[in-house]
Amino acid sequence: MNTVFQNNSVRLAGMVRGEPTFSHEVYGEKFYEVTLAVKRLSGMEDLLPISISEHLLTDDFRDGNMVSVAGQFRSYNKEVDHKSKLVLIVFVREVLEYDETVNPNTLELTGYICKPPVYRTTPFNREICDVLIAVNRQFNKSDYIPLIVWGRNARFAEELPVGEHINVVGRVQSRNYQKKLPDDTVVTRTAYEVSVSKISVVDDGELVNLSS
Image 1: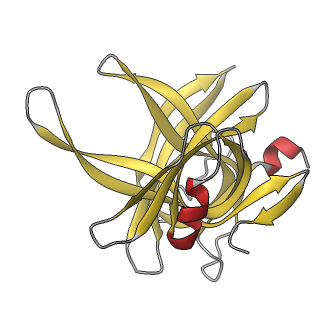
Image 2 (image 1 turned 180 degrees about the vertical axis):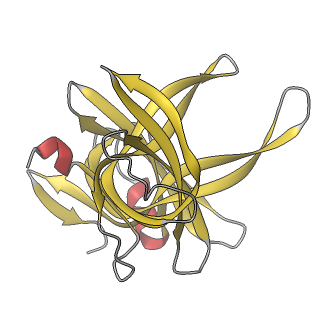
């Protein structure tokens, strides 16, 4: 398998919410956006956007149907209110047979830390470290993916330098937040990020588990 594809892999299974909407066209190939409601162990749902080619878009991708897909977690910049915004979406490379016994949300990324990690604690005293990594893609492109690292791993991640080559395993999650606009109105927006369950440093091609 192409090593670029190995750097970035995600599998999702969930319920289609709404109907596919046309997104864009590349070299005559049309792409559509679909929202998947993916359940967590807690019973809560992550509402995650996926991008799928017209060639993979079947009648299964209709509101209320259960589907499973594999692909990559990608980013691109979009101009919103005259500012550049980082947009994250799951790019579908394969439609899988739906299996309710399989973990519905798994992801693995290998990339390079591109900003100093930010360690913090929540009001409930949970330890968190925010990390941004660049994941190489074909044609000299990169995807910039925000990570949330928890607990003991957060303390290790805090010490990692910019440029460190790391591997992470986790899941894609959605999170609502409040944003105050210039006219003082408050709107609810959604952020997408990776919740990390395992983080390792890549040392000469070998993984060194930080929590060992």
